[in-house]
Image (cartoon, rainbow, N blue to C red; front, side, top):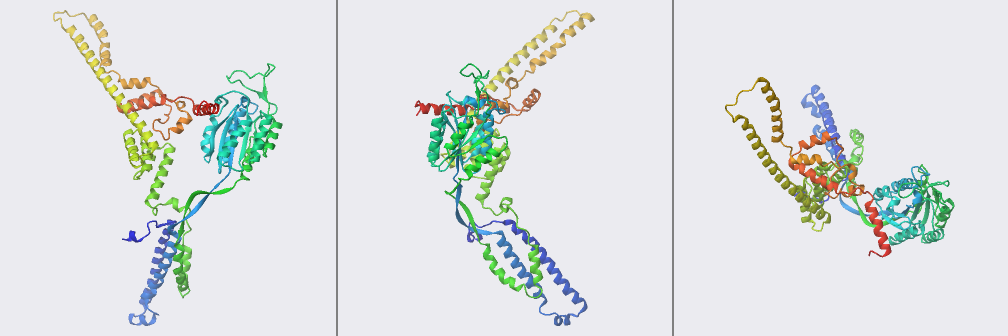
Length: 606
């Protein structure tokens, strides 16, 4: 009945304040003992019939009233500080409306090594520094050579872009040719126009301009639209040879000598001025990064989004009104000391109370916290901990995460059941359907391999039976002639020497090596290089891929193989087969993406 009377969302914002009831109990005990000791002292020296006339007022009432009032006031203050609330106040969420587009030049001249380790490697380092500093707003990344290619559109997830930066090389460009900075600037302008971005910042990372007139025109168009173009120059004016694409020698110039790629400082400064931006030379420190980030921060604005944040209205302040009346009584004689003790013994307000304790959270809040903790453990590779964190949590999202953890632990049947539970609650859950198909496929492969293993074991046992029958027949033949004369000692010795290896051979025939162990020894364990970074990121949500195994010695592999059951060995072989299917091409996805953009640009694809 009490639950029906209370609001369903009643909780405390700072529940650790309830610990202040502990010093209240100690203080009440101390004051009670003090009053009891005073009365006991007078009873020792005064007769009982005279004591009632000597003491002022009722002794029991004098002892109880201050303590009761102190308890009431203390309790009201503690509950008010704990922050009781049950009403939500919708509050709009503001987001930074800053947009920046980074354009990386992948032309062959960026492979020159006048800056260590190369211009392109230094450019990637600079972009990673920019992404680490881009904590607000949206960022896009374009790569260009003879044509521009979108690596990532405008997004607030800078970490996703940073994961693709180390894969960017000149070999990804599907078409050769001279750099076209003007086309890259035009493509960046199209991205900003599609996102309806205003006052965006474009950062061009290159060592030269290319088509100067067309590039200046594109920069002026961006400036007219309210954007600014900053140039981050990579390289030196002295220059360096450009390596050939095949890795041997250097690219020649028009006269047959070695071509030197020099930094076009003047042209880049002119281009930055046309784009109403700045020219920044790449530096080993972080001065260049701070300059470029400050350029965008000066133009950053905040706009209200469609999202709202929950802010709770505290009702604890109303509990302080009766405390004011009790505070007035504290000025009576003998009561002020108790109020001073109350003020001194109150504990300091705890920090981050909501994160330290969840006793006063609702069931949905505790479930969301468990799901988040499981996701953190899953991303860290602690799949058992991720599964344990979801214990007792129901719902489609919890079942889906539970299925992922079980799949990575090799418990495929339980994972399939978890995915089925997810689909019963959310039939349109695409990821759960995909993972369920993958798990079923692996279960079918394991069943097929188990049947093949059983048939091979039966064939091996039948061949062993035949070998044992033949060995028994050969062992009975020397005993057949009963009248054979005994041989001399020397002949006995020779026979013994020849017959000694026979038991060893028989043991070898009677104890053949299992087919599973032999197959496991022949199949090498996949190395960490078998999985590229893109597939590693995909494997976090796809149970088709397994974890990368640690490097082990052949002796450790043999010991581990002997400790596994036949079913576990079959599962390991199935996982190894899946890993061997993964191509060793980390940048393959980017290469295919660039090729598709090139084909669409030429009209070969819709």
